[in-house]
Amino acid sequence: MRKALRWLLALTVLMGTLSMAGPATAAGPEATDIKDRLLAIPGMSLIQEKPYPGYRYFVLNYTQPVDHRHPDRGTFQQRITVLHKDVSRPTVFYTGGYNVSTTPSRREPTQIVDGNQVSMEYRFFTPSRPDPADWTKLDIWQAASDQHRIFKALKKIYTRNWISTGGSKGGMTATYYERFYPRDMDGVVAYVAPNDVVNDEDAAYDRFFENVGTDECRDRLDAVQREALVRREPLEKKYQAVAAENGYTFDTVGGLDRAYEAVVLDYVWGFWQYSLLSDCGTIPSDAATATDDEIWDSVDTISGFSAYTDQGLAPYTPYYYQAGTQLGAPTIEFPYIEKKYIRYGYQPPRNFVPRSIPMRFQPHAMRDVDGWVRHHAHHMLFVYGQNDPWGAERFRVGRGSKDSYVLTAPGLNHGANVAGLVPDEKSLATARILDWAGLPAATVTAAKPLARYDAKLDVRDVEREPALRP
Image (cartoon, rainbow, N blue to C red; front, side, top):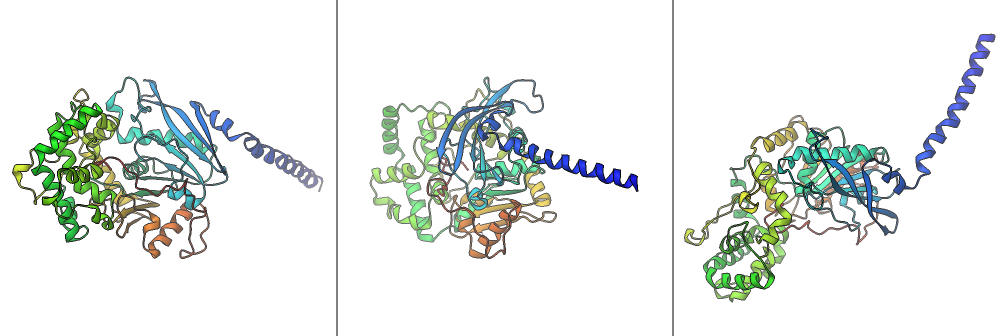
């Protein structure tokens, strides 16, 4: 009996000690300002804090190894941003695959889960570029490892569920991250992510352009594109004048003539990537009788004559390097344009990267990711736009994948999102995102974003990069 009493007394004392120690331990971190907690992370430094109602927004630098396989061989500063709501909320990890915006914004999954958002600038996009730049360290595994280190550092603060997301090249990035670090995220929402498994086989794009939209719209676009090549001589004179006025040069692509054709050949693709069928009325109805200025203005508005200048290409060198080494790039045919008018065709990414940077294509990289997604995808959602050319070659889930979906928004372009899905699929996608975030959704049909729409935060425009880039 005495032993029993002594044991009970000891247990009571122990429970009392734990009850005192528990709250004190939990309250410690919460009692510290979130900025202090972020800056306490080794390698994290503050660039700027910007106010936004209901949030704290931080622009930060995080020290990353240039080579994650050999972290002792140099570091660089990678920009990230944190849109902080509350450590008790789930967190969305976003990247667009290019530069990071330093303006507060909230991606669609962040609005759905009413959570925090961490955004990452992709390595080698300035200023997140090592100096000197060893371009062999720009690959999908190194970039995924950047995300993995950021996640590990911030998970100690944001302990609830995490979902990664991104649009276009950002959707590709979220997918590659999941392939290499499948235990980090609780879910993935990849928007309009191209999947060029076999770089030399691009017939899917040709089939897409044969059927997208309406006959009338396709005919208008094809005619303007052809006419721009027929009128090459007078329009290139205008291009020369514009280049002289703006200080444009063409060393990387190999001359103004190559740049001109590249812009013109992007025209039809660029329209369907960023415009809707309802925008066809803005295209000249009779290209043959249109003035030179009307042809120029239409091509410039959609493709942008600055895109293949040295000044236009330089910010996107990391993308073209990756397209020419791992990601692949599309090539399409132009059956409605006589061969005599096309001198170069779709040029390879090698033509858009300075020759001082060596490039060698790795055909296994995309095959590996594609096979993994088909057979191992778990908690992954892919959203595509019906009229987006980049969706012609897309990710698919197959036997072995679990709780993963590929959905298509009717009539939408490269800006397709969950909100644009048909009602049943929109409810399903929203419910799965909430579930992956560890949040309750009463029923699938009742699933709705938890946060109210904010016109400033909730950007719904297409994630636009100059054509032809995802």
